[in-house]
Image (cartoon, rainbow, N blue to C red; front, side):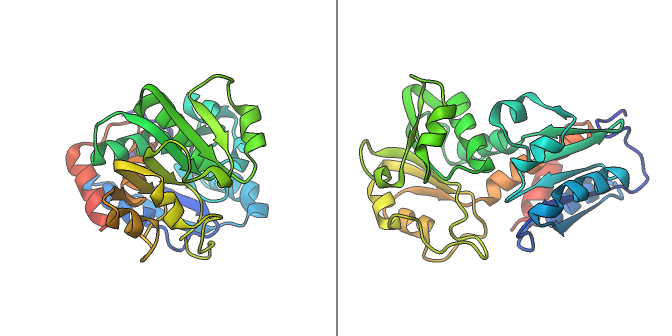
Length: 286
């Protein structure tokens, strides 16, 4: 079978995730389970790559014959400049989380948005009325794109919260469903039925608190709201615990991690993954 990475074979190939930090990543276990379920000898490793070394790491992986790599914090936007080609989602979002090395080219894709949408639908298939997304990094761009493009109901809105809302506003289409907001607006105004944390609050070595109290964020939820924290593992006593105690349906980042990984691996291998392979990947995350 011909694949995006130049043809599937029984020869072992290396894949990986580049990040800073990256020791917490469960991607290696998840992709190892997929390769085992498919009967492939490939390997997937986590690589700690500081921002100053990203270009060297990406070009080195391509030169060594890697099949592809994932990118996590803080590399998703910086990697755009390293790509020879971009998939439509990566171009639209302005961030990449998956690189495919094909025919000497570095091709950037973004599977975060599709992965997030699939994860949220696991909580509920209901359309989103009012959403609030916290953070302005590469992951938040994919999440906002997915909400606005796939999950938002008629007349729905997305408040995109950051420390620099003016910079976000300059990149948004006027009159659209997405509006930029500052942290002083978080937890206030129209109650939200989908709250998403895309900051590094709660991540290993990340900040311990939001610019506003988590209780204020939870206080702005509508009845029956969904709250997703793309950080994993779920921090004890954090946003999700508070939201769950308030009656919200909650989800940490493992489900999004699963689905973006499924879509990334399909790009690398040039084939769809069956439900048995997806089940093996999910089991490896538990």
